[in-house]
Length: 261
Ligand code: 48H
Image 1 (cartoon, rainbow, N blue to C red):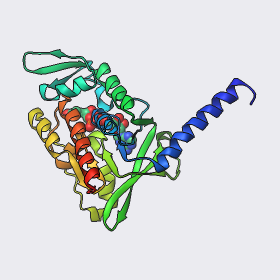
Image 2: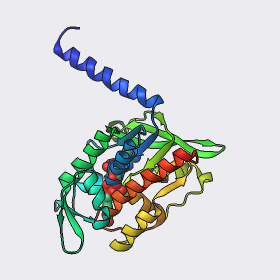
Image 3: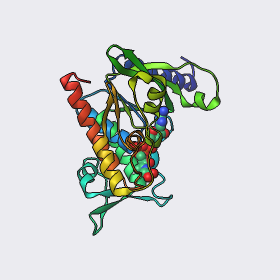
Image 4: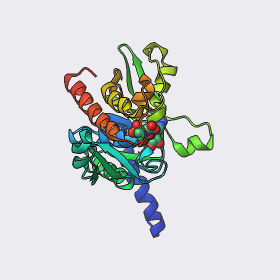
């Protein structure tokens, strides 16, 4: 080995490939999207000992968190999600309405740190462009992935595959994974209703209520729940997102333990 440049290159390729080789045989759950719901699900599932990979197409964490509310750098969280803020050591100011004000940058940084510290692997710049399915019994068994840089380039390059026991659509407003599965595997019978206009209380309540398994092997959390079930949006209040992430983690855990996933 000659110069430092060569050593840098060798180490990056060698250690990245080690991780990628692990992903070909060692993933329990693929989470698509490193927004609030995906990161929360990643932490609680990793805490339970599952091998988690989060694929995020951007080179950042937090999804819609960073924009706060119309770029004002705070977001709001309800009392019901306080224990999750505490689990992630996220600081807040409590207001008289039992609403908590959180700094957007701290929220996304600590959600990501919590997921990573629990053992979840987060890989940036990777776009999930399709799912893997098996017909009998009909179920989702993993994802097809592509570098997002390739997607943005418009080049025709085939994806590679990552298998898992469960795939979580945490892609936000467009419910991208479910939308692909609905379009390309019509026998799944998935109908995406599309998100409704704002009704914050209803949106928060129903997103949590409808979080869960869509079809065997495929789960939904966060705003993707609203897109799937036709639920109202809620604006920059995030209790529903993180409670939904925790709930999907609990449901997947139950399903995997009972073998009914
Ligand atoms: C890889 C992908 C893909 C893909 C998307 O939008 P998010 O923040 O999602 P949630 O549901 O965790 O949180 C929603 C919240 O941020 C929000 O927008 C709210 C509460 N809105 C209310 C309102 O009224 O507007 O994060 C999703 C992440 C993003 O980082 C995407 O880049 C990523 O998923 N992503 N990554 N492959 N196919 N699709």
